[in-house]
Image (tube, rainbow, N blue to C red; front, side):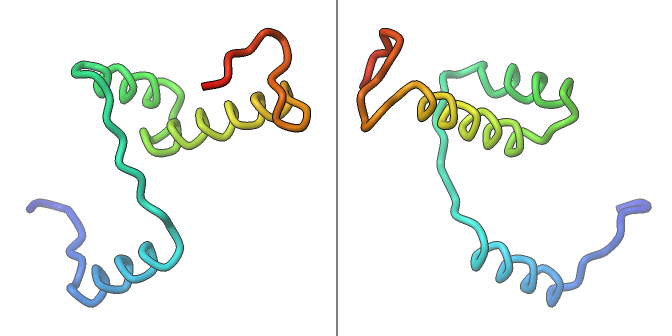
Length: 80
């Protein structure tokens, strides 16, 4: 195990409980090969994969909201 700090079962349980109470989980399926591309991109930006995906989603949602009025898509956008 080397120089890695050991985490007790109690610490693991506490972290799991905190995460379960404060976060939702989302399962993401992407085409083969894209995982490594996404991971490399996130690392180049100094982000975790989770952080990058969350940022990409929130920025896209803000942009989508800015381009719509009362649910109507503006600028020739396609609504799926």
